[in-house]
Amino acid sequence: MTAENSSSRLAHGVSPVWLVLVGIVSVQFGAGVAKTLFDDVAPTTIVWLRLVTSALVLMLALRPRLRGRSRSDWLVVIGFGLSLALMNWSIYQSFARIPIGLAVTIEFIGPLTLAVAGSRRLLDLAWVGLAGLGVALLGLDGGGMTLAGVAFALLAGVAWAGYILLSARTGRTWAGLDGLAVASAIATALLAPAALVTGGGDLLTPHVLLLGALVGVLSSVVPYSCELVALRRLAPSVFGILMSLEPAAAALAGLVVVGEFLGPAQYVAIACVVVASIGATRSRRPPASALAAA
Image (spheres, rainbow, N blue to C red):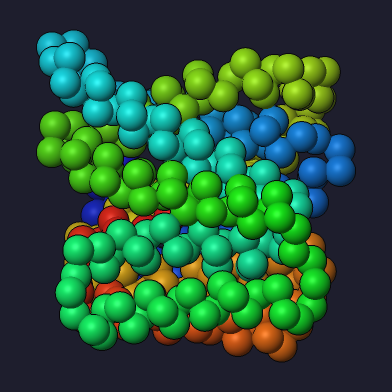
């Protein structure tokens, strides 16, 4: 049975809303599993193993056409791969320093800002202001914040915005998910030297390889598959609203998997960012990719 036939059957048997929610939960719980390994394995190594897993699955499943590509095609997909590598590397560096829910909340400022960029409507500015208030509240209660952790989360947000823009450009020249498959392979190659240096002998340990592959499946393979099938029947605006639940899902994953308890003000902060993201999505109706996780 081909991947196309499998996804077609799945599309008719499961609500697309549930598929998106499964993808959201999967990617955040994958982050939780990854964080439990940080005491033994460097975050860079885990990120690389995640990218290796997704790149192998996507390249083998899609077999993208590489011949006959123009220089412009390659420049765009290389930039896409660079943003993918930077986004994943920096958010995992943030996870290693601050709670997952707080890191994703700060990271979400990137795509949210992009969603309302250029708007002169007061309502859109209000959504940005609400999200900014949420971020300002993060450090008021519950602790767990570090300057480095916040900086890495902000860097991840910038890379996420770049990923969104380059994803749109890549989609215009690479069919389906071919561009994502190639970009994942490029991101894997870019992070390989750092992973080999920081990982060393850990990369030869079976349980590290197994858990790294599990993170890759949870954080990349499952979400990509669910989103691909869901978007065939789901309006982009609805998809964007659902993706706005990412910070809340991240906080839940941090609590359940890692035991990260946040303070009341921090939960209010997460709620502010979620509400702002939903509001911006409803008022601006950005493309589905504008609030999608990688």
